[in-house]
Image (cartoon, rainbow, N blue to C red):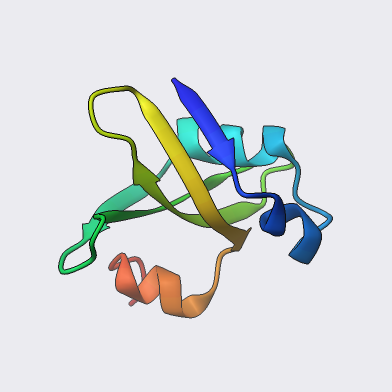
Length: 87
């Protein structure tokens, strides 16, 4: 699997590393696509290397096992709600 993270992610969130994002992707706890987005966006929540829950939004490149992550940060209540992970 190839994972490309937009450099803006690291500029806006210097506490998050490439390895953190990769770890969160590979250990995702919940994921879903966002219908109506073009290209189709996928959202996921998973733990990073320190155990922090990260959220990320990415598009998948057609025909290859590759992700382009354009948003990653510590998980927010809004993301947990979108993924149905709140009470």
